[in-house]
Length: 126
Ligand SMILES: [Zn+2]
Image (cartoon, rainbow, N blue to C red; front, side, top):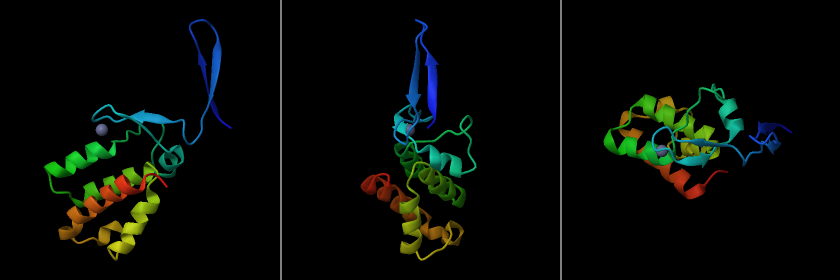
């Protein structure tokens, strides 16, 4: 068990256990608070202090403005995996008949990004 110790102005110390449901972050785009899966963050190349995770709504808005490029798709899939959606991301590989994102044809980028976002909206974190 890991926990956070916080010293209150009164001098009282409170301990908060870190669980898979107690860690939140703010989206750097809209400021919305949402839960993150720390295990997923650490399983990527991220570290606790420099990782900024954009919420799915802001990611969606980003793609409504411009056609996604390969880097965008990779970033989106990575972000969703960090948020705990790796199962949904991997399932879409099957749907699109690919074994890696890099195999996607450029005309499928938009469809893939849409599919990713709707899988997340429907399924919730696994
Ligand atoms: Zn946001």
